[in-house]
Image 1 (cartoon, helix red, strand yellow):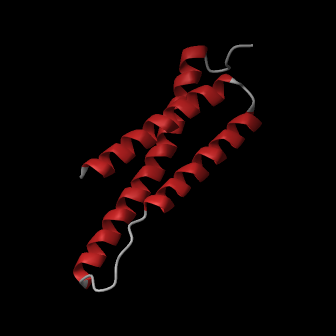
Image 2 (image 1 turned 120 degrees about the vertical axis):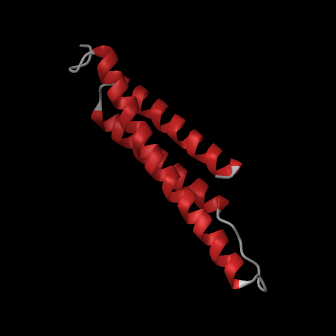
Amino acid sequence: MEIISTSAIILSFSMGLLLGFFTMFTEDIRIKIIVDCIGAISLILAIWVLMPSIEWGTPLNERVEILSNFIQTALSTIIIYTLGDAFGSAGYMLSSGISGHR
């Protein structure tokens, strides 16, 4: 994997992990849902901004390779963000007890 793909995946997992942990800390499911939605929308907008532009005259093989690499990275970051959020939530539940603190 190239450096951009690897750093996007690492950043996505880290952000999901932090958001998952800290939103569980609030113990309010509405806050968790709102923050998770904002995080997911932000990730999708970041992916859209980073989408490669393909200029006219680029050979077809090169276009297909650029697009497939981008799609692979984009899907990986979304899946890894979701996993990071789940691990962060589980980490909070384990550190505070399954029922959380009251």
